[in-house]
Length: 207
Image 1 (cartoon, one colour):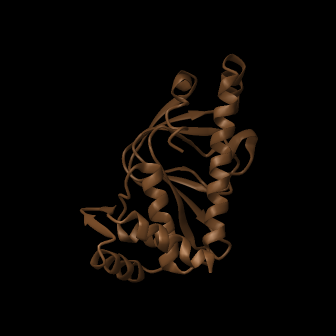
Image 2: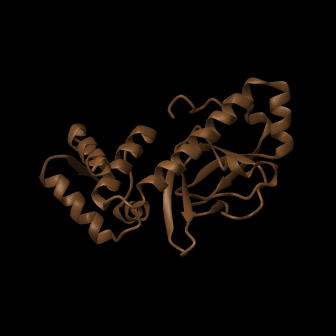
């Protein structure tokens, strides 16, 4: 994903600039797509609402990434995008995207690569839904570090990633801390032993 970051920067002049406060909905799952978005500054959490009404965080968008890619050509948004802090967002309508791709043909592949990445992420989430909680936590922790360079997330948000209680998440985090796998620094989880966390992420999946 690091390869995709900031690749959309040359086309920002085609978009509309918006400032969003914390916990503001940028787009909503199920509503007709209005276009796509680019996060210039701040943070976006992407959530998926199940048929049962359970909300799960499936991605944390770092600055420099497109999001809401599935909302092109009036297609319904498959997820919701909400700010985690004061954020600067660029909005690109269908018309703007057509203009970008006409003037800059290489932009189409950047958009396509980003869309494919998001669908792959969604598929990974679905594949791990029935895995044990500890395995899911290890998987998401590694994913967060890979995508954002850190795992800056409180335990309540982490529990929404897994779809379990904060108490369960806390027990596993404390166990990992005692075993020397991780350290806790303010809101950030720092992996000390990547080998052990990777082993936990793959062990249950293989069995």
